Image (tube, rainbow, N blue to C red; front, side, top):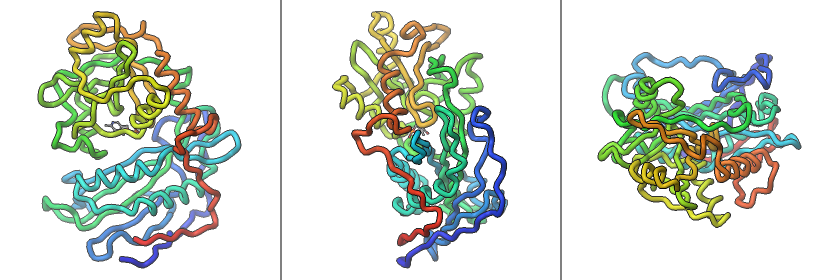
Length: 368
Ligand SMILES: *Cc1c(COP(=O)(O)O)cnc(C)c1O
């Protein structure tokens, strides 16, 4: 289909009540509208529209319910002190979505059009972006397979949906180190599996380990699924260690999800001339560094928390304390810089920020 697509606007007459900025839980409240677009093999992606937020009508035999063919993304819109609305490297999210689509045999989306759709929806819902420090509007684009068919094959019908949720500050009283358990029994995924794709199945597979972890464990540290030796990720974040002045993060290996935050951390460290290595890193190396007193910091990186310092690692009932359980200087500097750029408080030397124009009256065009 080469004809131009216009986003149809079907707006609700009166909005819901907005929650207080200081009473926001993560992912529980949704804005007044959502974006939808359909796919069929005959028509391609078509009928992009903004409609009132409401339950979907999906056939019980829709393939997504049975075989899990779906992908999602996660990003945020930030309100600056000047009242501007900003996105952080959103192009990378849609590029990654197409990478996930490819792995799940879902037809690709037009990345530029998807970005315009996000901007149009966010601009429409601007009043839902909370103003309090550290709050934002979480953006969840996702695709589900909707063909009514109990056959194991790629679906011929899909829906691409974007919903928005105002979210509170991740850290209410300053950034707080978390306690992590090394997961020696369960694995998240393996190279050749779907670990590189952002798909719900990876999360379904991760729940058991979290449930089995002892009280007070915030997340688990995933090891590679073959040798159970090399570190992959922490919970649903990428992971970094600072050992003897050098920052190390697991190299992308086919099972690790490539985070936008991970990539930004690497670029910032390079910019600051802090040595950064992307390579295999084993749990043995971390134990050894801890024993020798060279394990300086450990932290997770992802959109929700931005930087999440690890204060303690637990494995086989052994407890490793990192940086006396305190947030390290590198983690703090990364957190302050990334959030500073996202909220427009400091200069953005990398062109990472994408402004959302006030286009509430506008219409969009794209070839699809
Ligand atoms: C989304 C995700 C991340 C973090 O990616 P960001 O783009 O930085 O938010 C890391 N690991 C997994 C498994 C994820 O799903």
